Image (cartoon, rainbow, N blue to C red; front, side, top):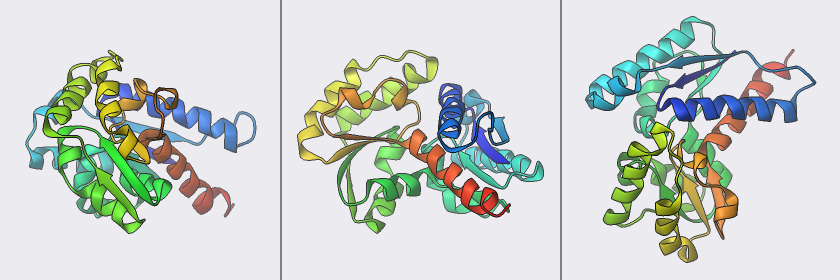
Length: 222
C-alpha cells in the first residue's frame, strides 16, 4: 500500500491522486491501480502552527499511515521536507523524499527554485542538488514575496492564475537550465508550454518515484 500525507494543501493532494491514476495507467495492466491511503491534515491548523506543532502533526499523520500497513509513502508538499530526516525516523515504511527525487531527476545544471518562502530561503533543496552536481538559485527577495503570496493567497484557494509567476520566471529564465516548481500547487498554474527551459514538476516527479519504489520493492518480488 502507498501512503500519502496530504492536505498541504488539499488542491495539491487532489493533483497527486490524479497523477497516481495517470501514471498507473502507463505502468500497470488494465484496471490495476495500487492501494493508496491518504491522510489529509487540516491545512489551517498546520499553517497557523509553530514549527514544533507542524512536526507533531506530520509525525501523527505518518504514524497513522504506518499503523495502517503502508509500505511506501510520501508527504505531498515540499516545505515539510525541511524536517525530512526527523520524519523519516518516525516510521518503518520507506518515506520517499520529493526533494531527493527532483534533484536526481534534474542532475547537473543551474536551476531556478520557486516555492514558499521557507522552501526558497532554506537550504534543503540546495544540499540535495549539490549531491547530483546541480546548483539552485532563488529569486530576489521581492520576487520571493510575489511567489509566496500567489501560492498562499491564490493557488491553495483554487485560483490558478499564472501571470505574476511567469513575470518572475521571465526575469531569470535565460540564466538557468531549468525551473523547479518546488511547491506542489505551482503545477496547477504553470506547465511546460509556458517556459523556454525545462520545467521540473515536483509533484509529478514525486509520484513517479514512489511508484518506482513500489514496483521495485513489491511488484517485482511477487
